Amino acid sequence: MIQKTHRLLITGGAGYIGSHIVMALKDTGASVLVVDNLSTGFRENLHYGDCVVLDLADRDRLNRCFHDFKPDAVLHIAGSIVVPESVRDPITYYYNNTMNSLNVIDACLNNRIGHFLFSSTAAVYGIPPEGICAESAPLCPINPYGHTKAMTERMLADTAEASSLRYVALRYFNVAGAHPSLQLGQRMPDATHLIKIIAQVITQKRASLSVFGTDYPTPDGTCIRDYIHVCDLADAHVRALDWLLSGGKSLTLNCGYSRGFSVNEVIKTAEDLYGPFPVTAADRRPGDPPQLIANADRIRSTLNWTPRYDGLSRIIQSAVEFEKSLL
Ligand code: UFG
Image (tube, rainbow, N blue to C red; front, side, top):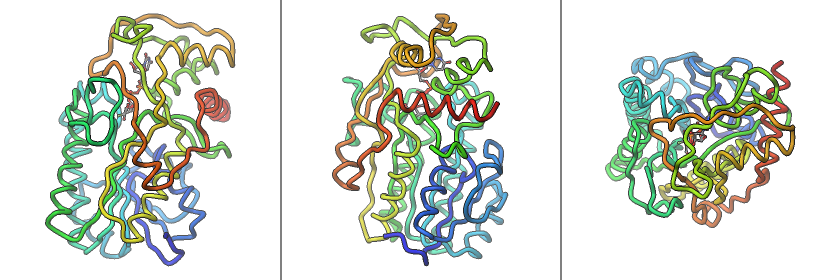
């Protein structure tokens, strides 16, 4: 279990997901150090622990930081996360995700840090044949983003084989929503994620929503995703850390609710809550698989993880409430 005496270092802790994890760690009383270059993170997201502004590409400073803080565990959450951007600019993704992850793993080895939590993604699966993936499914990414994360998973597995490092790789499905306190949420005004954009349209910060592709091989022709509330995801991290710090073996775990919604179903749910808003059909977006749904049996049974914020309406409402708070 995480104790007050534990020292936890979290990269990307000022970002959308990282800040929710830090907030969840606050309840444990552990010492937390956020390492973030604030490129997509925000100081407003920091409500607990200390923060060092540092770019993970700076290996010397990174190693010094690990040496000085002496963490019991590292949570590596920092990274670039936009699938279409990774298609346009793969090199940036290989630097920010794969190379910087290598630097973080290397700094762990240099400083004898044996517990590692990694923020991976459902994008490692590519186009799973049935659209529903268990962790044992082959990794066949169809976009650079997925490749960068799959490569880091490989580096972790190889490193764990060759050292005493143990890790948990959490494969996130589609993360959305905001903290119930509304202190935290997706702040990026130019974010590209569906539920964020819907919240911006509903609060009249954007004129309309484009539906990227209406001719996919799905029942209504739009892509299907498994949307998970960011607070349930944060809780999965706390449980995964408990697991590692209690001596658990290395694991790879899907983080989703095992239920898929099409883009049209997400729009319908939002319109039922807030009334109609402008929607236009657009071309497919490069790199989008038709359907991604988690088989989440493993995380439920291994970590005893039970979602508390399950429900698409609830996720959308929380995103809209947060968006209003940004007005
Ligand atoms: N979409 C639209 N219009 C928009 C935005 C999105 O139609 O304006 C569609 C996309 O084409 C896709 C679906 O909504 O079909 C979800 O798209 P998002 O951009 O919200 O999310 P992605 O599925 O592309 O990617 C997210 C994370 C990744 C993660 C992936 C796992 O960004 O890190 O979920 O499913 F890997």
